[in-house]
Length: 243
Image 1: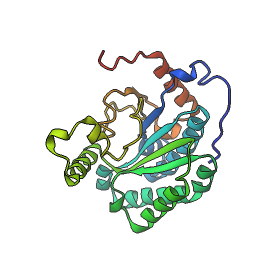
Image 2: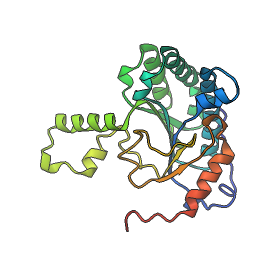
Image 3: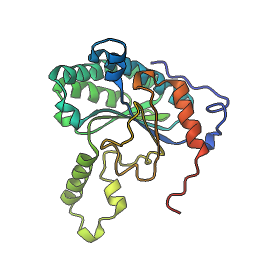
Image 4: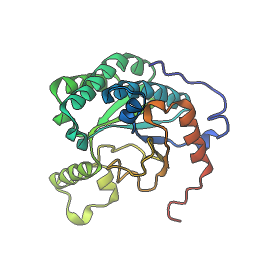
């Protein structure tokens, strides 16, 4: 995963100041991509991993500070055992093969979700990647795996209750500080590929004022040009934050 950074115009037209700090992506459409090509549905997931490589490389090039990818929701456990096992295997293989390059390029990896529910081999790979990239300062890559927004809020409430904070002291800041994403700026832009127009339980607290963009492009076909289009669309919008 050669992550490059280049100088020059950002997205060709947008100024750097107009770009989001944090982009979150709901990566949808792997199985439909495979079906459209007459392939077994599982073949769409390796293609989706390749798309991650290209998008991450380009996000780094464009100077984004945080990229959050929705890789596996807690609802995805309802899929077939073969598909779930394949997704775990892809995650483990991708982490093992890319960790050294991510560390070299200053990309810190963070997993958000209930990683304690994952198989031991997958957890071990995740922990190795987290340790190896902990010093990265150029970009934060959040992988939402075994993640659900409502579960995140449940876990946040549990942390707050366990900390002994009195009810009258609970405010938005204390809730934000108990989330998986504590310390990270909220997403400025949420992109969903595959044509659906819903958040699907993804960053539901953090996305309160995010700009939303959906595209018919299936995730394996979402590359640098598509990301640039999204960045230019974001730059063209006026964010009012309720004012």
